Image (cartoon, rainbow over all chains, first blue to last red; front, side, top):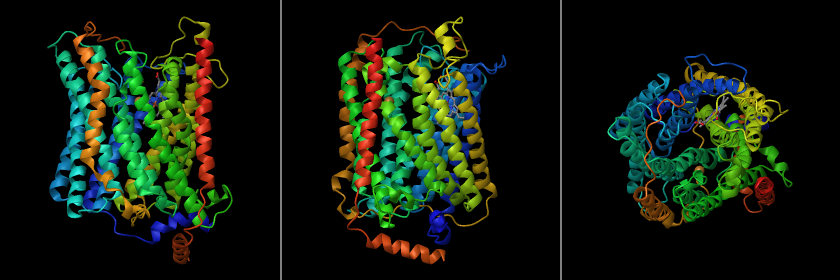
Length: 566
Length: 51
Ligand code: HEM
Ligand SMILES: [Cu+2]
């Protein structure tokens, strides 16, 4: 019994200096917006699953694609972004000291800009004026307010990112010659990635879509807009996963009572993510006409380079587990695993996320391979895939984080009861996702398309078989969706309890002690100018010629298709 | 009780540094690598029989 509770005791009995309450409040509003968006988003998911499975019929005032847009925007954009910035503000305050009043004010301004943008976009979706899905591909056209909302959202996050970077570089100035704290290093890499990537989406929204939605231009270069979107879209997924990796690298080692295996390896992985996750957007456009094979090939190679830091991460994390398990007296090839705190939700939820990342990552390599992409492109396989990556790996990691971060910033305690509730949530989410995502993967291999409301294609036998499989069936998807929704509602309850009802007290921000190799951190890893320079060179290399080609030899402009999927 | 439990645990972390083995990790990463290859070739096979 002592074994399983060990990690829980660590932080209730040994309070350290936590974070400034003012910074805690800043983090808390971000986390709150995230969970309210989460609640609405999963209810959309439930309706989609039931509607596609033919189990319910949506009322006439609620469109399938309207819900699907809301689901994608609320979960993939709003939930993730807010919880990430909540984590960043709290973590920077913990590791680099409290924010100055000026910077904190800037952070609040960023919060309001982002939130006004969110409200504008959400209102347009509710009004059914923006059922263009979260990727807003042209020539589907939304109300111009939707595009302005998106722009404010992005700009707001840039201001938030600038705040965090200013705090980080201030620390570096005050501590010359020292390796910077890992948290700030990794947050900075993530934010640079986000800002550089955001330029692409800003270019298409402001330069193409807004003028077109306002009626200043009649036609739009669809190929260019999709390319600029995916220039942003792939780094977007790294913007989700890198903060989750930060929890794995920095928080989990402490939760299990050990220390990170190597700091330099962690920094190297993050530098590689920064360099190689931007010049790769074409792997989302492999089936698209108008881009030559050569440039698709180049970007595919660059995509596969990201395997290196991904496997570095898998190695680092598992090595940290093994090192810690053995230091605690664990023996044998794998029996040291028993020494890990399985009963502690702060470990268990992210751990299940890591486990799911194995099939998720393997699926990603399949998606990125040209011929294999032809098998799965635009099928439900893809939806199954990203419900594993962002929908489980990232989400479960953030769930695990929420159990200490929320009480930390609200001055409360993670109780045993909440811990147990978190374990149940994690199991339910994992089981629900096994059914939903598993069935989606297989349905996709049988050709079931994504982004399609209920249809039997005039009772085509192939389409009917998607409802009749034992496991591979829309019914299984719906069943998994129901279990997931139960898990999501329970998580929302956990959030409310931890935020407003848990007993008052101190909660620890678990963060790994400096790894042994910290004094030997190679100075080059801290050379941001160099990394930004290389990133820019790689981007110019991978994109200049194809984008030039798309503009000079532009395809015929497309007129607006406004009400296609209303 | 909890306090002392913590203390000894921290001492152990300090002490048993040298002879830590990473055999489990080796097997684990090998497993991941094989899993990736098997799934990749499974879908590649689908591509071939459908092409
Ligand atoms: C209760 C949990 C959830 C359920 C039942 C659910 C269900 C679904 C279903 C059935 C679809 C797509 C159907 C189609 O292509 O027609 C979908 C799409 C999607 N889901 Fe979820 N989902 C859940 C949670 C999440 C989470 C947590 C995330 C991300 C953090 C997420 C992100 C997305 C995205 C980005 C799409 C694609 C939207 C599009 O194609 O434009 N989902 N979901
Ligand atoms: Cu991608």
